[in-house]
Image (tube, rainbow, N blue to C red; front, side, top):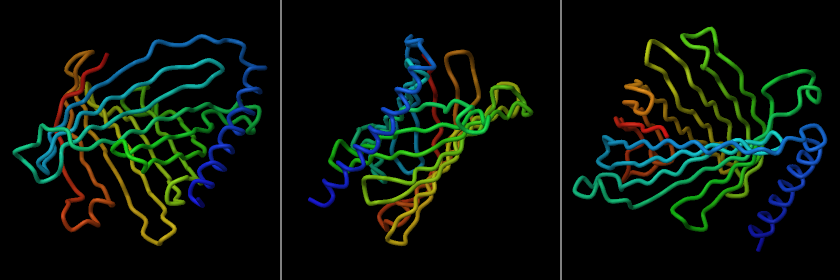
Length: 238
């Protein structure tokens, strides 16, 4: 009952937070056009004897909002005979909007987001909300480089918090780095890092060759699992 009540309170706070922003946004941003969704699919071969299919989706929404998210479908670790068989999944989807710079002392790229996490289709789901700040790294090899900082002070599952850095950095012709580093604060005193930086080489406009470096602090705690792995693969952009 207590956990259910916390879910309801947190969800209502999130809805109030977004409703207020939506009403203010509507007054300032009358456009209500959608963009067509964009998709990416990446297939990885993890060194821990399983494969992963990652599907990403993004689109612009009315009133300055945007939507981004992904679903990972994995095999199980240390099971090479069934590495192609999907056994577990994880999904993460975000609804985001930048603040009007006039609200935040002229700072551009500062905004808020509501994030949903789901594990294996079970009831172990989490709803997070917090702030983000995204800025350009145009001084690097290409002007599409950027860095995004995120902090989620409230979470509906396990009462944790999370701080993240997400990035895309051009490093040479056809090459760029992408990925994230998450730091998960747990109230039980056992924080954990999760990081997946990735090197990408663009074969053409539709296909990249990738190499992802994976570390999961939650898996590293489990004596039956390995926290670190390497995952080469192919990315298909639609």
